[in-house]
Length: 520
Image (spheres, one colour):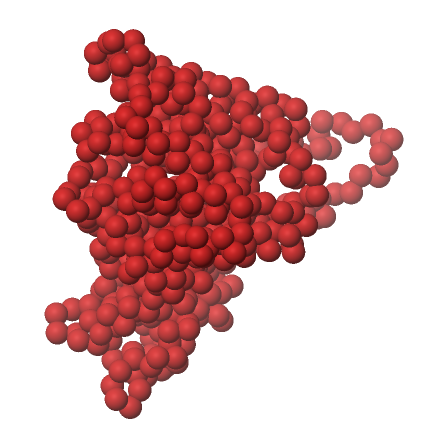
């Protein structure tokens, strides 16, 4: 399928696929259990539990595994076939099941059954006014080589020949139509129109919150990487249950990027000190002391984080606002750069694990996770300072190894490699080996902390987030190539391969036709 719009990019679509798969898996389990229960009920009843049973009186239990699990596999296949039959009176459910089998790569087990279903779908030529159903039917027919006319989509146009604006609220239908539009033939203009229409509205959903803040237009010096920020959150946890968390972390990342750019390349020392004090005080009355560009940034941050804090307090009875330390760490680095100060490795690491934003991200991630929080959860967090600190070190050091040369050449704060070179008087290769050793040791410590916490009976979401953020950060800094262009800060030139599509982040601006989930 053309394009980037697949399930681990689109939360709504992702949820539909995963929940469909999980739902059918549950049904399979139920069917299998029903078969076993029926077999047990039909078996000869024992006269008494005291009765001495001879070997001949009891049938040996059939292995559920069989040779290499073949018996169990065949049983599940039969259950899936039965599901396809049971769904014959619900065409949409039947098509979604077929689509799910294709997406998870097991449709080849059911080629005969799928052919029967597809013949039935083809013969049912009734006009359909449900956008999702019509789009799914069209796509499946085209994918399986059946004649399918795009004229079926005319019913979704208004009297002017345009797709109805009311369709913009049907996210499921838009996603299905977007996928169907990639299976057009030359000259099928209605599918070209469908692609343009769905792309526009799905992108609108994704960027509605961000565009509403108008920060990109007013802070042009800052990187605008909404898509990259969102993809990063998927790498941490793609579980559809955590859709709210991914949206929240995307917003979080946007502000971290903006604030980082303010401290790194735009603000003066005096302005940065004012900004730090404003964030530490968390007082909207302090906004008048800030320069104009900082006022918008602080107000947007203040409102967004306060909304998070309100929801945490409302739903969980907890209060958490933790941005002061991040800004103080940014200010330390800005002063080092302004004064030409060369920190020791110890001084650098003591500040860098905070300036990497790991604590802010992981603590917010914990509270954004949708699970049954207890009142003692805030206390539990204090048992994991090492997890947060070690994770942040890993993220920072991986970042340093990947980007330190480019950042040093453009005059940024010395990274760990440069600090070690200067402190020990060694060549860069030796310094890189030293930092690699720090990373390996940090990973060992992280594994130890997580294992000990689990062994002590702690089932804590933060354990997962710490590990996954480090894994994702490692891939992230190994994938992107950074370069410096006149008048711009970090510019990123890379193609990110996602589900066979390409998302181009060019010169710090997302240039992708990929729609995604709404952050509003």
